[in-house]
Image (cartoon, rainbow, N blue to C red; front, side):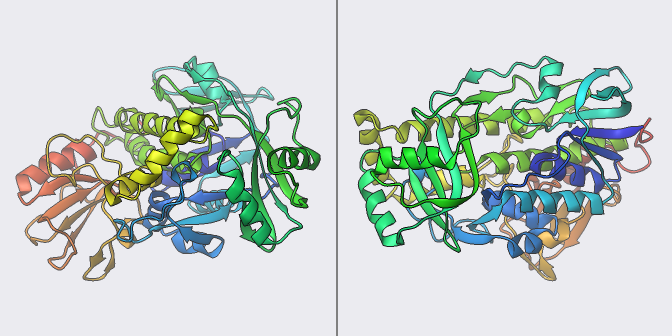
Length: 481
């Protein structure tokens, strides 16, 4: 009997497994593929995801394998730099091979005690009041208290659950890959400048060692079900740019559409959805992997609380209440970006206007904070603007704030030195530090780093501790009942 079975060991599934193991939840991850992906696709970790890596003590390991880039030019590829004073200690983009980040998260989960089984596909499941019976493709049956579908856009769990996935089908396909080129960078830069006068969904971006990321419209290229070839890329490059830039030695080649869909709900009873199983959108702005990882960190401690027996009644439902609106916003901003990449005269006029508006710091900042997810504010009720937002990694008397969040617990940061969290010693830590770089007397942080309370009075703090972390010790129902 497991506490949680996770279908899918991509970034969301691996991160969720690790988050659950921080709370001693018995986790099994089922991955239908027998081997990790072999192609070396580069993905970008945005500011908020880098902060989460820092909160869990993973950032240094991640940085070893990535390449930092400026945190600007993301929104519809409009070339505007990020503001200099973004509210983060990690205000950059990290380009990192997808197999590397997935492997790091997978090893992190296993180091914490998660079990991962490859070559195991979920074929069916049934849930009842006590748990979920999961049947694998080979007929084996497993039992757990909860099941989470992190099994991608074509999620078997979502389909078996009967959850609708409304949205728009793909209208335009794009070829994307990584390969070497046979011409100088100067020639590429000059040709791209000409092409971008009329076509935005096209680029060749260097990754180092002569390798470029190549994106080109796929109009007219064969069957969507067939994997693209290097000759397909050459043909499309010649059609758009008048030259194939001498591309050769591809690392990987793919074709993607711009379908945009959002699951009608993220939870039905004991079965939940996260990552691409809950939402898909074009990769414009590089938000997909980040959105899934952030889903996992939001869900992990709440599902663990349910398993361990201390979750307040509505806590698990806040996962959908908080994360589904975030996904809706991502879908909308990718829809907007897609229109801004259109070659139509009206779209090009709007793009020129937005480019002018982004010269205003407030506009540029708003769009950067949206793409990088540091502008998210959950609805925790009336209060100061900081309430519901994540708190940046600030200086403390001894070290940094995020270093104190590695265990995935709540945290009271108290500048008054008068408060206590003594009723919740198994769930919440306390730091009394009058020197903390904070503009308010005290805050209560959830395990995901969002500010759940601001104040200075013990009774008010106790009420919010109970709201987010359940009854004080001694009054918690037995775990794994």
